[in-house]
Length: 129
Image (cartoon, rainbow, N blue to C red; front, side, top):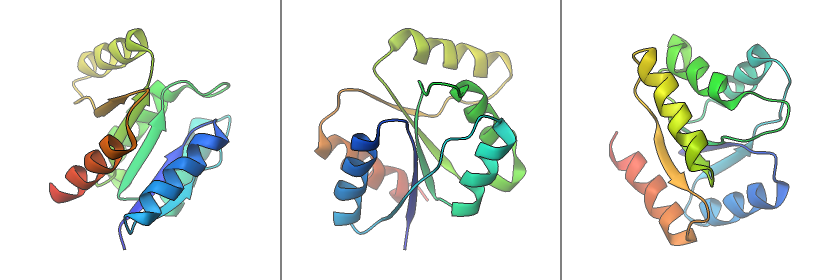
């Protein structure tokens, strides 16, 4: 079964992701938020997700560093990232930071998005395997 992990501080949104994606046949796991990057990466890695849905604004957590940490961690090389945000400036900052380090920006889904768009995006990410 394909696995999707979700790292977000909005419990209602996590539940929405779970409902929509489980109906599509995916296993969905919420990743507990931690203060230190190494803890967050360990929690993500413990789930062994195929895809990680990541909110770019999580209080007390530098999501930019989480993205960079995943992209540069050989153990997580197969994890596909879907960054969700309503903040275009933050998305631009993320892209600039990653480009500066020679890293490819992850796929982005701007909030608010349609639930069909979420399903189609996740389906497309899996079909590229």
